[in-house]
Length: 285
Ligand code: PAF
Image 1 (cartoon, helix red, strand yellow):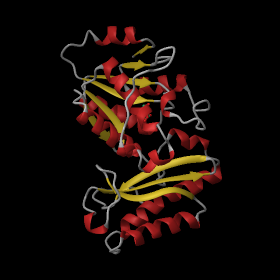
Image 2 (cartoon, rainbow, N blue to C red; image 1 turned 135 degrees about the vertical axis):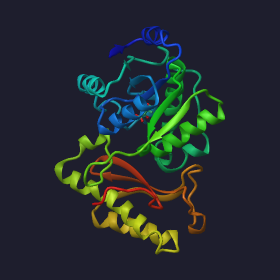
Image 3 (cartoon, rainbow, N blue to C red; image 1 turned 90 degrees about the vertical axis):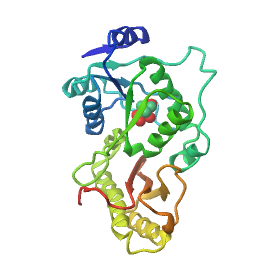
Image 4 (tube, rainbow, N blue to C red; image 1 turned 180 degrees about the horizontal axis):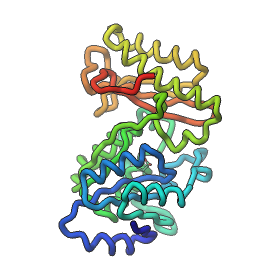
């Protein structure tokens, strides 16, 4: 495995691969089992795997955790090495010294769910992902379904802009009690960690009752009450179509309906999602 810190270096390395399929796994580092599962999927689908590690300032709001975002680089290198990554791309900065003048903007899809409280976040995400695609020129790129809105928006970017890359989603990886793996889980105290598992429990409860409730609002009330009982502050809890991200009514709720949640545990903001219809084996809690 090689660590490249400049654009010239990574491009020089990748130039020797002519026929091989190159997969990119874009990350902001602080790698956990969720990232490892993305890498494993990349290895199954491609010949060469590049992991980018770059904490992208453009996707953080003024009062968010850019400065304190964990950057355990040595551990990340080890995790990539163990997972069989070929190249880490770890640039110091991806933007022009005096600021970026031309960037991408997401329309309606970025106003919903997480975008409602994180203004400009998805513009920052698509801009950096586009830069990474232009540098690495991967055949495919893997994104986790935990950030489902991000995955939907990136799929839409590639379709709308006719970009020559296949975007592949990967299943959420969870702890035994259901909590979705996230770099931000490390901010939780022991008590908060116990509380946090109730986010997944609320989603599972809603999923298990989906057949019995003819009204989406009843299902949402069920989920909200569960979270309230565990003193979890809900930023949003919605059932939306996974492509349009528009809230669905029960009659529209087909196989593409998904439950989305963002909640605060102490000062840590966590997100999760689950299909409304259980068509796969989910970890039971
Ligand atoms: O999901 C992430 O870690 C980031 O949003 C991404 C896709 C690496 C862009 O900075």
